Amino acid sequence: MTSEATHSASTPSSPTESSPKSSPAGVLFSSALADCPPGTVLNEKALAKVLAVAPRTLRRMVDRGELPPGTKLGVNKVWLSDKVLAHLSERAERLAAEARQHAARLARKSF
Image 1 (tube, rainbow, N blue to C red):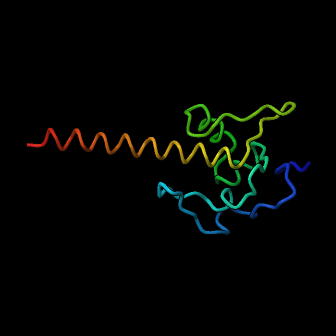
Image 2 (image 1 turned 45 degrees about the horizontal axis):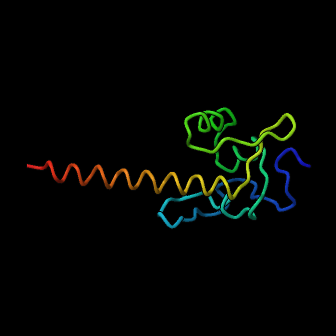
Image 3 (image 1 turned 90 degrees about the vertical axis):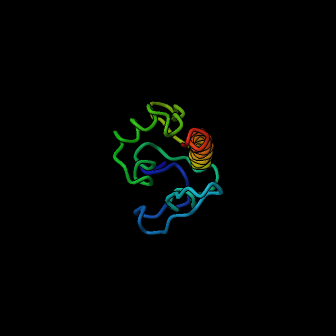
């Protein structure tokens, strides 16, 4: 097991190596995460690198609900790449629905 990720497939050395991809909801994701095979196990350092954030920022994102909580594996937390993408996609869809509802309320109240 490497310190970067616990999978045999390699991730790009930097998140900017590949272009962003769009989810069905139109949200852009770094293709470094989207290109990971389903079930790729990423530790905190690897996920932070893929998302181009510091590990502390990653922990804050989890605390705010922007990312799913990691799963404890020994003394470390790990994330499955497909679970992170699913969480981001679901969150984007939920926020888009809330924005549509808010826009509809504003349209009804317009003068």
